[in-house]
Amino acid sequence: MLLVETPAAALAAARRLPRPLGFVPTMGALHAGHMSLVERAVRENASVAASIFVNPLQFGQGEDFARYPRDFETDSALLRAAGVALLYAPTPAAMYPAGFATSIDPGPAALDFEGASRPGHFAGVATVVTKLLHIVEPTRLYLGQKDAQQLAVLRTVVRDLDLPVEIVGVPTLRDVDGLALSSRNVYLDARQRAAAPSLHRALQAVAQAISGGESDVGRALEAGRPVIEPPLELEYLAVVDPLTFLPLERAAPGALVVGTVRAGATRLLDNEPVLARVEAVR
Ligand code: PAF
Image (tube, rainbow, N blue to C red; front, side):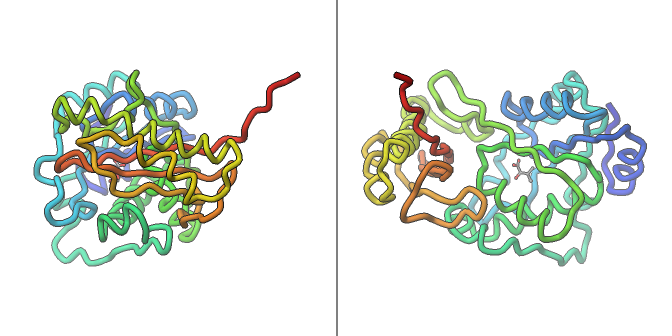
């Protein structure tokens, strides 16, 4: 695995890689969820590039940029062992040199939910991922479905800016108790960790209510709210169109249930698709 730290070196190295080229952008602190993206990229492409960059632009004031978990040696060993050919790990100065001034406004998909809770977050994500795509020029971009709004925002950016890349959304990996894997799970204390899977159960309860025929979102959400266990505090629970991320008042299979809870200073987010009800075969 070749390690490069500047845009010019990354561009030159990526252009030498066999195509199709899969690309997995990360902020490091890799867990099995990230590795499922890498493994899928390795299966589907002739070569794979990854990046590790804790992107200051996507953290708001008072968020966890400084304490975000960082373990470059372990991360790069995992990527090498998984078959990644090129790792781009720029410094903040290489990514954002003095005078850097451009920002990508991702539009309405970025306004609600995480966009409202974290002003500027999706502009930061859209800006860094657009830069990475220009530097790596991949055939396919691999993103986790856990960050469903990020996925919707980046699909919009890629479409609107005519970026020549196919986006592959990879299903969320969960612990045995249902908690979605996240680099931020390491922040949870024992009580928060024990309650954390109740977020996914709440999302499932809403999705099942809609699959079972409840089209009124207000009523469907009532099935989920009581499921959240203390000390978790519900921030939002909603049903959205997975492509536009606009909230729905009436829902049907194909919609996405999204939710975020606070566990102390840590925010946990997750989502659950509303599936069509499979009628029993008589
Ligand atoms: O999902 C993430 O880890 C980040 O938002 C990403 C896509 C690597 C951009 O910094």
